[in-house]
Amino acid sequence: MTTNTNETIRQAVRDNYGKIAECNTPASAIIAAGSCCGTPEVGLEQLSSALGYSREDLATVPDGANLGLGCGNPVALGSIKPGETVIDLGSGGGFDCFLAAKKAGVTGSVIGIDMTPSMVSKARQNAEKMNSDNVEFRLGEIEHLPVADNTADIIISNCVINLSPEKDKVFREAHRVLKPGGRIAFSDILATAEMPENVKNDLALFSACIGGAATVEKTIALLEQAGFRDIKIETKEESKKLINAYLPGSNAGDYIVSAYIEAKKPA
Image (cartoon, rainbow, N blue to C red; front, side):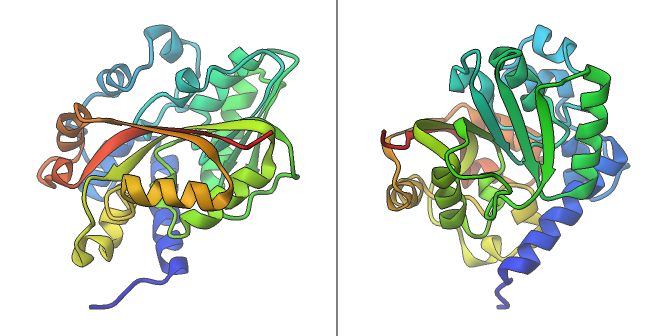
């Protein structure tokens, strides 16, 4: 069995999410059908509500910012305070960035990072519609963040870490750009058991947030190695039903679960 290289995986993910950005179609439609012609099994509003977003959240962002790419609500999880600097890893169309910017206020700032040019372009267009002066979007990989040391008070991410083939680098970079005492608040997909090799090497399943999911134990170990402390991981067992509805026919809920991940950089 051929094992995909890290760059092969990154390119497959970049291509897939570029397609989502260019089609302006909810992610579930494209991931399920492999094209812009798919019909999502779960409506965007229904999905967002199940992930913890309110109708007010959905009403305050422009069309095209919410592409149904998340697996939770890291903005609510993070308890963002006025004046804080927020970094969003894998910012997509900017949905979570705009919600975070409301909490950070005019004295705070939000930096969205995404490796897909068409996503960054879409997010910047959405920022213009929002007149968001405290939000910016940068092109870059989450393993090599285009951000200076000790910049952020909090780093959020929504269903993106599982897409990286080098999670150790992601966590080290997150630790680097956080201020001492800073924190992470991630919503992500974790594996409930070690993935079979055929699942891990399927690029379509990797891009669909299945093949690249790490176990809870592995995630804790990588966070500790990166220097994080006070690590908390809460799995959402009820998410298995939603995952199976989001990816019909995949039985993905047998392998993965959504989770909230929190940790701090020691002060």
